[in-house]
Image 1: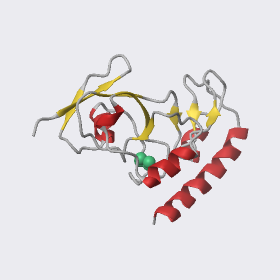
Image 2: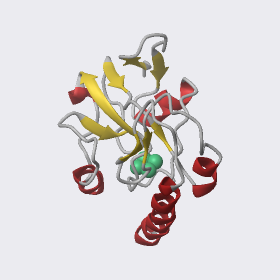
Image 3: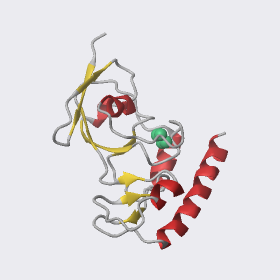
Length: 160
Ligand code: FES
């Protein structure tokens, strides 16, 4: 079987070719995009969320779990998919990445206190913007992160 091409809407990311039935996430990983895969590819977090800008019909339809997760993502749109759930079944799918950085732990955000963000910093489960772009990260964000660690524990529990 021939490989299928996946394109990126972003400048500077080359087309990836993958075997049919590969997960869309593998295309992101092939371009060294830092996808945190917080839920371990189980369709329960926001960290592998993408927008499909061309040929969405060349992906498998959303699973019920994916639909449920997307329903609670702050940044979700009609063309949203979870790339760990969507399999590639045709040529020419084009992907756009959400703008921002998913933070995966209390510790990683704590290290950034006092710094100015270049992109938005987002919650890894709900995709809520914790710190908008071009803002100084302040200590009150830490409180939100305590909540975040709790959410992750809950997600793991649900998926177990
Ligand atoms: S890695 Fe968590 S939903 Fe895809």
